[in-house]
Image (cartoon, rainbow, N blue to C red; front, top):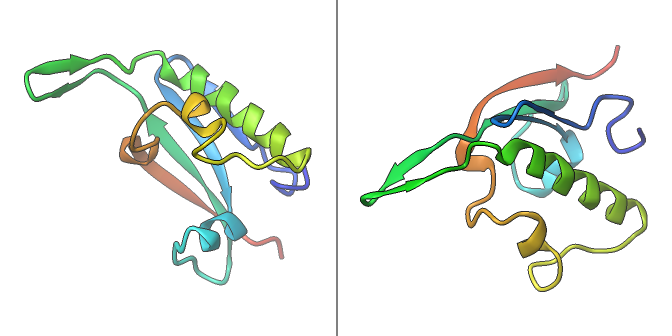
Length: 113
């Protein structure tokens, strides 16, 4: 709850839709420009079959895996254990370019008044 200020951190809806809360601090660390009145946003990601260079990549069903991976990352962060490319990152997040290319929308969350 501390990391997400009481907001739901992440959720999987079926096999294809993953929703993740991105707090303002995380966005700023990743050098994302965020308005002063925004506390963060929920990002929506859809994992579905893709066609690329004469091959079909089946990502359907990946949303629950991202839910579990984000849960493990959250717990490790709470235990003050770092996740780096050299240790668990490749295992927890197997997509080479991550979930960002699969983002289908965002909902900005205003700061509490």
